Image (cartoon, rainbow, N blue to C red; front, side):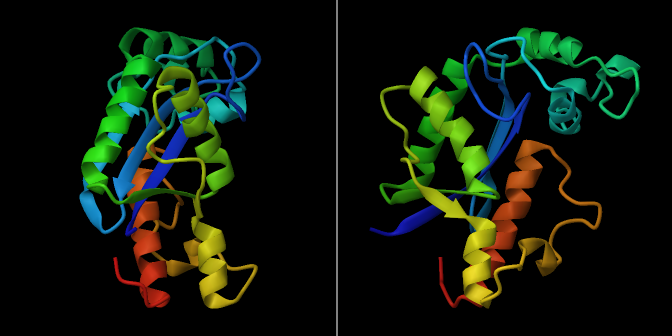
Length: 204
């Protein structure tokens, strides 16, 4: 069966998901590799009030719901940043996890056309941990991405034969690094993987 690669990026309130002791996925984005106009993005209501400040300072850098909020408490670069206030905004303006995962499942099915959807991330261990958990908890009828995936950097290291290689060396992402908006990150990683496939002589 032909593969369709789905680049996924998540932004989270902490390092692992769980309703009680874990952390929320606050946003996620996806892009079909080779078809950059086919994208998906949602900002989610939190599943609890747990957070790690360092994770929130990264995960909130590109949230759309904060664009028009100028107060320092919403600015993850500010010393006055209040992660719990951001969680309150998401609770009011984000979509429910049930709606987000249902919409995402339909989007994946629509954009894979019966082919095998392969989740793609960097690192796959982190992003797929959250998407698999959220599908299991909030859309248990089916996970259209399955329970495997490709790690972008590992794939690239195999192509170039260098265990220390990183796709950041391809020169596609900005010099400042990923913008930490989940959709923009997913689109950049999709573009990087397109280049990796080209280097490997693989056509989409």
